[in-house]
Length: 610
Image (cartoon, rainbow, N blue to C red; front, side):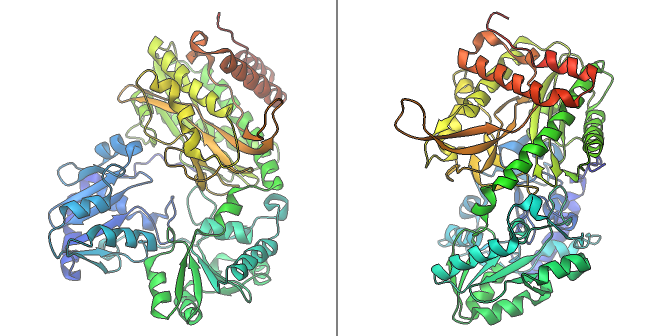
């Protein structure tokens, strides 16, 4: 099993750990200490030894930030994690704030006393974050002080840094040679009159060098850093203990390999009067300070790998379609199995376990392999389904009872693609309000799926389509409508997203999720998610502007028992029937007779008269 159901939260220890941290703060000469949810590489999923926020507070969500003073501890989380933070943290020790409405910078500006010293870890704080913090406190008389990581000083059994094996992502799945990717970026540096580019995002490095690794749970990353040079080979800083002879031989053909400990020396030597490009959102202050101290000029630009990585090439697109076909078969087999279970006889853990087993078994049966799950499966029943990022544990595990909603959000990592799909299923007979809310969510999902838009359209321009039906009844959801997805990389990939803050143009080749939802705290949650691919502009008969649109990649029935056709329009019903016809045609041949009959019924056409 890739997924563990042991609770990682330990909020009961926060008082003792906060006291130890405050003693370390006193010894370091700081009044405030900042604890972000990140590692030295700004990864979303962290190696166990980098889970400092969870260790300190008990909160295990994937986004958060803590500010610790000698009197208070403030945990900042966004709307996805409000309920989870309440459940996992000790309210007597930790105060919760909204990460969006009142971010840490705003809190510091309002709450700091004059001339206080704010301690931070320069490896965990990016160049951009430091700028925002400085601006926030510039009129307070307070100062920022890099102090290393004080939590590392008090975390006695902190796990060591991972050393997972690195392996090659072959051309048949990558679609483009690493040397060609490197040459293109090198040419960009030359044209921009830039001497070098420092890349610290392992996702970018893995894509650029056509390698993958096993240092991080759920994401096939090898932790490494790179300096691209306008002249000469790139410098790749990677622990050689991760490299087989074959992989080392491959990498030495396209890069000069160095131990991670040599990065500071090489960067200092390169920086002398040089123009060094860095991404302020990902490069840590520790490294930008080296550039500045050695007379280098920092050129702040977005990581040059991000956009090429996000706009999938034809091989990556073909691989994604193939991965989604296999994943759709596995999920449909699971949904068939789930329908056979008597309400009250299985639990959230049982369901998540069975889904992973089916994914693994089916992939092997067709000569493929489930290399990982792309995130911990959200297997959520009843009130747990109202937590958008719920993680089932033995302690939180509920039985799937008659009359409840079961939400399953899951995905797989395959060598040719990454998947992410959510289905909402009634256990027994759903209530009328459950059916209505689910249908409103479905209407928003369909409006995104049907969207046509011109070049230049950003995610924020179409986000309203997913919410409009809900808004008409005074309802909404707190998370974004969609996130980017990588090619056998991170299931959460930028820069593309569909949300109120989605400023990136949606470009052909980008993969993004379409996942509106609705949540009634303590009762039920609904989400319908497919991954979609942006396709290039097409002329529309009778029109004057070519339009882009979305090709749906995910394949699995959308549960008809939670749909009220009477509140759907003709276009929505036509889309749903067309989608289900496609799902049935694509998947049926890979199912056994009983599963095939179930799928045919689950994808039957509906009408407003039903």
